Image (cartoon, rainbow, N blue to C red; front, side):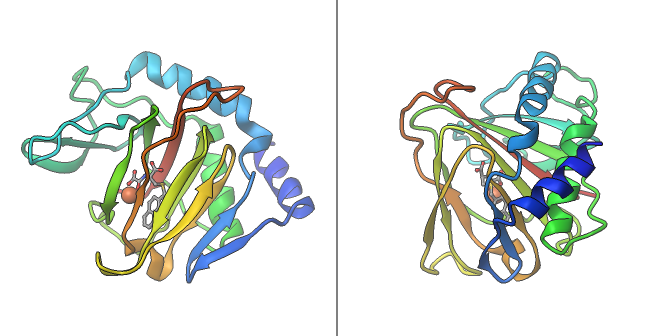
Length: 217
Ligand code: MD3
Ligand code: FE
């Protein structure tokens, strides 16, 4: 049912911007299911609270994170990895709600990656001032699978570089409901998020939440 809704909305509003080869921005693609997404995130958060993790170098991240799905991304002094278990609770991460999975699958299909089935969803929470430094996503097993990201709440300035850290970065404003599919060559491009500007979002208040759907294993 939700899959049909995405198809009809995508047909009516074909907002599609190619940022680079394999990187497709679908503005507002998540808006039809925003209420369901926020309810699902609240339930996940009740089982697996957001927490600010530590990098292997010992720095505490400004972004707070949680996960759902069969694999969750974690970082601590021993490194970055995907784990079935939430180290905070010792229990498996909450299951991926079908509204989240269906949104990611339909966005991937719109971008030409039909058949994408995510097994991990990392949920990042930014409060004003939180940022993510330039990095590559290299902890997944198969780089031929895309990553689907969904932005909710306050807008952010997303920094999008190239295959080398020294490549020039382009800036994109990602707003509530925007979905980006990162596949093909862009899958390993450097990227980051500038410090979140303060503001008040009508549904989320003073924060931004970003979902990234991945094939981790
Ligand atoms: C481009 N998150 O969790 S989402 C991350 O807004 C991460 O929270 C950012 O980078 C956020 O790793 C950006 C957009 C994104 C995600 C993965 C990518 C862009 C990407 C992988 C490759 C290239
Ligand atoms: Fe990333």
